[in-house]
Amino acid sequence: MASTNNVTELIIVGLFQDPEVQRACFVMFLPVYLATLVGNGLIVLTVNVSKSLRSPMYFFLSYLSLVEITYSSTVVPKFMTDLLAKIKTISLEGCVAQIFFFHFFGVTEIFLLTVMAYDRFVAICKPLRYTTIMSQFVCRLLVAVSWLGGIIHSMVQILVTVQLPFCGPNVIDHYFCDLHPLFKLACTDTSVEGVIVLANSGLISVFSFLILVSSYIVILYNLRNHSAEGRRKALSTCASHITVVVLFFGPAIFLYMRPSSTFTEDKLVAVFYTVVTPMLNPIIYTLRNAQVKNAMRKLWEKKVNSEVG
Image 1 (cartoon, rainbow, N blue to C red):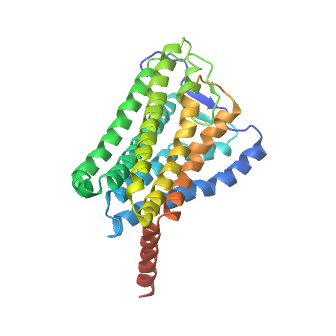
Image 2: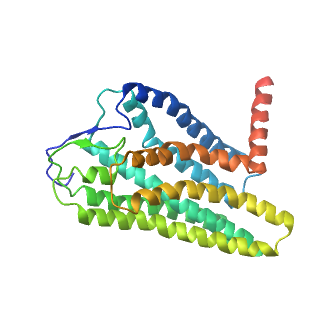
Image 3: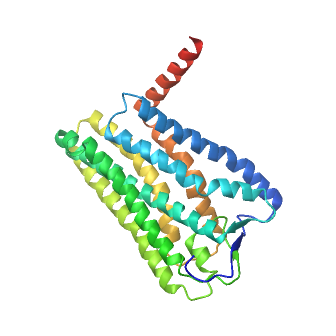
């Protein structure tokens, strides 16, 4: 940390104070996290193994699932162990590291969702040029740019944070480390830093969301010229993506585009996008996609046959 700090360890307030409620949360959230790992991991495996899922859409989906695993894992394992602990602590350096990776993977997901919208736009609006525009090189470049954008965003957040002096108190009113709760512990005015965070996190979410909405408005407009079967397939694919976008962007915009607070509702909203949403994404994409379901079924049958043989 660049500034001189008297605080080296932080105490995390957590989601609830009642030990019984915390244990109930542990029992409830553990299967959700395991489902996140298994569901997203299965999508990554299926896309990489199956020859029928070689299109750019599934290439991006596999990276989205990988990001979901890492994004959720920056918060949930620590959160789960804290639910069983009497005193919840984290070092200041560990707190900053959690903020870095949380924002890194979160913004990478935002950019990947935007890239996936662009992929659908090209596929539906420019079908004859789709394979030329969305070449393997372009797909890899778009994924690399998404990761790079996440790193740059997160580095800005951390450069702002490490300049702050922390001399007490050391109780962070949240169940994980994030910028606004940590800023409240700084023994200096953080209004400028708050504006930087608003510009960096909030505006990225809003602008990306507007780009996504605009893309799907154009897509829906162009679907008028497609056959009924073509419209049905396109709408099925787009509906899955739009659902994921709303589930992810809604909470992000709610939390980062307004002044910070310590309302219990904020913590519950954070639980939704750190614990629940990463688990829902593989369900949403597989339930509405026959190709993914068939590929998973073939993968399972191949595994069973190899064991029997």
